[in-house]
Image (tube, rainbow, N blue to C red; front, side, top):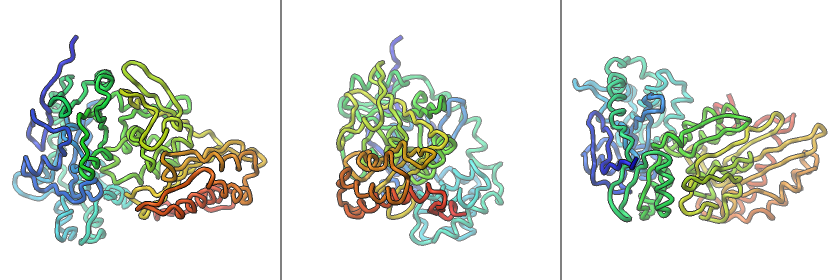
Length: 493
């Protein structure tokens, strides 16, 4: 049966069905909302997904037909990724009688706004949290607001407002709760199983009908830019003005959303977001969860994918060093052909990966550390949350009963042109007693493994010293007399 092709993008904006026939592949949701729909409540602050002023909610159906709303950064979210979704802006919150929504009213009553520029973004982030967790803890509130910045109000009034939202009631009149069943039916009606294809040549925008359709398209058009979460590609457009066309959007492919635990391994589809992965990963690899919680803000984690973090090959990607240390592997697919390789072999040189034209990352396989294995990952940044890595070290080790190192895997990001193993350091540790003297000897081997660069995030000397000290920290935290380092007030508590 021939593939059905639809030449329009369909989604729901607040309460209105939208059908667009003329959409540029690199058009952002923020520009469209402000310039085409005059919805000015969604602001442009940083245009890179850092400040949260552009936060909107995007609702999507799960395979079980559950409707999930997540806060996203409209400034780096492309229109092409919204087919079959429900986009909710600040203008949709207040009911028709002009009474404020409980989230908005709480912000007013607790003086959570001064100049007001950032306020709609804060409201939308708190709205998303309130729908999922009506009575959140302080930690949950702060996590939800990691991606929202305010220059003038101060965060304490906003936190007080967040704590009080449920005391206002309002669930009976909340638009997204009242209309949920109707909205599920409307979104189901948009699912026609067709491929979306708009434009021609380099101006082509494609949303595949399913995973097989994506494989066929990419094999035939290997120069297309693949966009999953757009947390990196979005900046190519907004900051670097790069031409990314033609573009194929894969965020809606349910076949890439698989997340399974079997035979001591976690298999994660390339389309699984950080937010979707964190619970399962934290349950089976507890040391990995805090790293995911420090990747961008909540909006970025709702969009960004582990598969995308790997596929773009950045030397400062947060997950690859940890995954390399764990011995992760990738399933790559080209057309109907699949192959599996070790993740550490995927990265060849800066901007170059072991991926053939038309081939894509389909699944990431992460071995769960065995009982007795010691694993840790440390991220060094100028500020704790929502910051780009200066250097990141990951360690996995097995000790014999006599304290001898029988297995050691060390990988770093930010130290070379790719995420990279520290083979010389590992060799100095392997077969030796796990002692401070052994670690001090191994620390001198870092110069054989890495020649870091100086950039805006850190100097070469700082990176070299920090990398050594992370090994020392791993030693201190894995010896029986040591107290684990306290890196946040919640972890300290």
